[in-house]
Amino acid sequence: MSAQPQVMRPFRDNTRQRRQDIDSLTWATSSTLTRELPRVGYLNRIWVQLQATVALSSAGALHTRGAHNIVNRFKVNLNLGSNLLFDCSGPMAAVYSDLQQRGANVRLAGVGATTADADIYSAPVAMGNNSAVLTWCIPVALNNGDEFDIGLIDLQSSQTRVTLEITTGAPTDYSTNATTVTGTFYVAYEYYEIPYESDVAQPPFVIVRTLEESVPINAVGDVTYEIPKMGILYQLVNEVILNSSRSNSIDSQRLTFNRTDTIYNDRRWFTRARNRFDYAWDPATGIYIHDLWHGSNRVSTGDLRDAIDTERVSTIQDIVTVSSGASLGSSGTNNLRVGRRIMQVPVAA
Image (cartoon, rainbow, N blue to C red; front, top):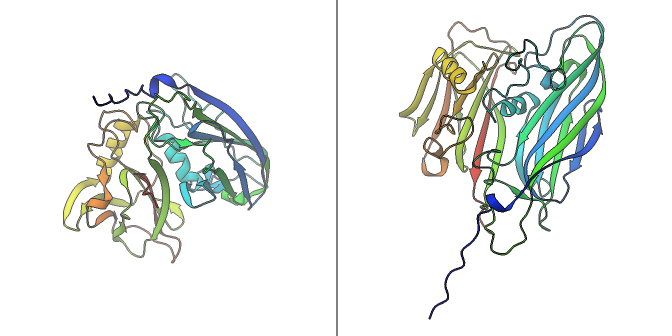
């Protein structure tokens, strides 16, 4: 008589969410700050806040990409950089913070309020010393809701090291007329307990990656970013920068398969309206979002109905059409920045 297969208990019912403060890192201009995450639990996401004093020689204006531009890059390295789980500029990381939940844009006032909460966002630009507070929520797993277990990273594995890397910019990356920055990054993380019972199913072996790349804009008309054949694509963010400033001077954005099959063809007004319906806030100037992970009409959750398996399509192109009347600056000041979130199942060596 053959043995009966073991019935595994669900992970969701046999774990516990935890949140812990990790450490603080002292600001240093144009430097790279690192912190290895504690070797405890399944990592879900990382929170970072910069509390800083920014001195301005006279009243200034925030960088066109926003105050979050003061961070040049966030990286979450798995095993000392052999796999980048997250690799985005400060502004793009702020966009992906916003995309984790409906109405999550911390730079805007909450329901019933008229100004942003100064405990999570403040970016003044007056002459003299200004107290700035900037907050990021860096996603590692798919989300913190129904699919919280997809993409969790086992921090307790002897083969796993996860390091947060923050590359800072110069004061003028915050605003014009900024001269000095002093402050502290505070880091916390959310994780789930690892059940030790042998009859509890463990999370699926999946890696979620959030990556940002850039292509130059050399002329008006179609600007094409060819999406790499890498995993399942479920979120795509386009950021248009013309003459070193975020710009709304586009006519449309499209996604095409095999160069001729247009899956999405959205004029600018349609993208703006759809993004407002999806997130309950208006994306910043120059930000246009293809959300392929919205099948249940909730942000960053649902099934894979609209996600794209990039390895099953020969060519996938993200095309933004820059308006014919757009004002382009000199070479190097015009580019399309593309952020994408993908899921991958690692292949054993």
